[in-house]
Amino acid sequence: MSDIKHGFEPFINDDSKLLILGSFPSVKSRQVEFYYGNKQNRFWRTVCSFFGDEIPETTDDKKEFLLKRKIALWDVVAECEIVGSQDVTIKNFKVANIEKLLQNTKISFIIINGGTAFRIFEKNFKAVSVPYIKLPSTSPANTKFSKEEWHNALCRVFGGA
Image (cartoon, rainbow, N blue to C red; front, side, top):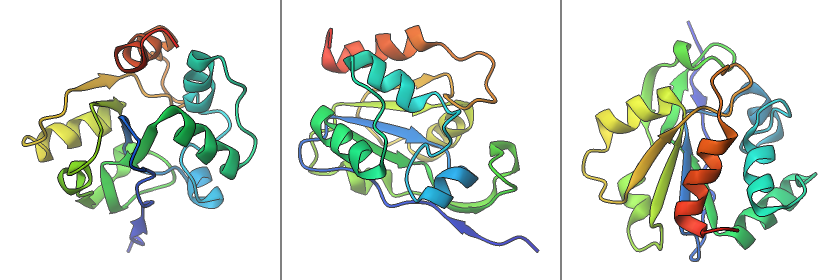
């Protein structure tokens, strides 16, 4: 019998205008207790390079970067059974309450990080009225990653950083 794993609380504040949704935290992320904890994941490299910033070293530095850049993070899956970090093994999951999160926020755009997150989002969040886009997963397992697609999507929210 598999253990139920719990995801993180959303990282958001009153000024956040972009929400980036992943599927579920990786093993490394769960170990460091914050989003995109695997150093091989392209997330921090990609988003920081868009703004011309260095990759933050610590979790606190990452949080400071996100607050400064008005970026919120969360996952579409709040809890599930999962083998390692593999999205394809996610089962018996409960989705996050994204509709409630979006109430009374300044979120004007959502980036969905990868196919699994997108499929779950599309199936469960038809009522979300905030514009969104699916982007290639920043996971090191994704061979079809496109930094350019990510930067183009970030331009839609932040203009030419």
